[in-house]
Image 1 (spheres, rainbow over the protein chains, first blue to last red):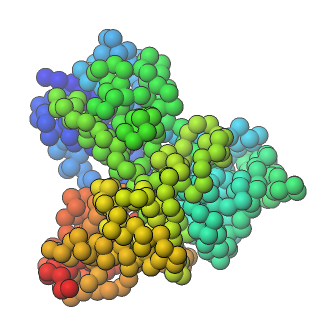
Image 2: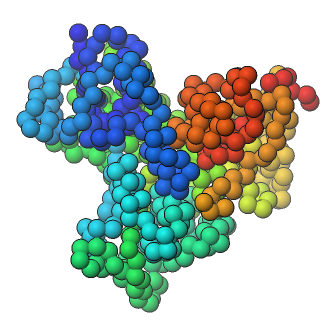
Image 3: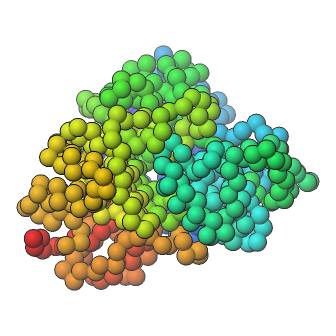
Length: 450
Length: 83
């Protein structure tokens, strides 16, 4: 009887456990996690912060589902892995033997080495404990400072504002999320934040967090060329994430920024697999190892790794990255390559070679394509048009077209018949795409709203 | 709750003959849909399976569609499309 050990109770870990159990009804599956809350929707933490959903709702599975998987669930930190011996050690020198091991330890927020970073009142948003911590500290009418440039930073801004805090948002550059959004999209987001009372500070660097009695009392920053001192009780940091690869590195597994693996998600030791945010997989287009921090790929990787651990022969093909997020109230879908400006190194979000949560490095690649855009109110459609295919798209606001565009990009559909129409000045992009899609899908309802 | 964060742009087009259909690739299992269903349908479980909400009890009120922060859900005509 095979012994499977999974380290990590996130999306990848659970998907692996479910897949293993489907293929191997009698094997022992041990799931080790340092998170006492187990499996929950981590992206959902943003909506817990805004108050849209209560904490218990974030747990998708009831006890029965977990019980039916017949897992040995243990809350414990893994201290060391010994690949040659097929053993690992937990805290308290407890030994666990395995035949197949999955390392799905995820990623963790990077904290800058700013003076005062360890004061009570400095928060991040990685997990349920962090969300609870933030909610304990959030005081209506008090001031919070948020630092960082991606989705998580904005989720913190929105969550704290929704809890009645006066939020000051520090951006290092001249606009929000400049390597994915274009200038107008950034401004649109910023205007909506300002309208809700958020105070934006551009070109602003946090210099020091000041405390009184061990608690945050103010920040000292540089805003452009002037000094800024702000009294506040909370500082939220989301400047990027770093894969939690230490265990793998100590075990001698090949690693770079994350844990390196082949298409079967096997690490440099054949009985050890990896999946999720910690895995660094080869992008089939560029041939280079890339990181992403997205729920969908984590689940997909968990299924492939789990299947292979149980004897299948599955390949993980990194799909064209795709994420949906809500920025300043606007649902936004990002598909494929949408770099708004050529990658600069070192860029703000690249300061440690890590990435942002909910992010993919593919979005930073500047596609060799014509960029075209339709704007209507707060709805926006931006397409990257190549000669025969769409390289990527950003759909902000109305999402009716995002399903079809998702498929046009992912399936590399031949768009030569509409290429010239798309790149014409003031082209009605929505109408052209709608018509193109309708003609391809005569047999059934192509859109939700008919 | 601030108005901004509920101001999603999903249309309120309620079709009598429609059903709520998920795009599971967009779903992150946050559970807002199930939480907001007035009659307690576990919409999230449908989204996980990628299956339309084909429950007679569904009022097609659109609350789950409106609340979903990731545009997972939409109404799809259960009838063949008229073109």
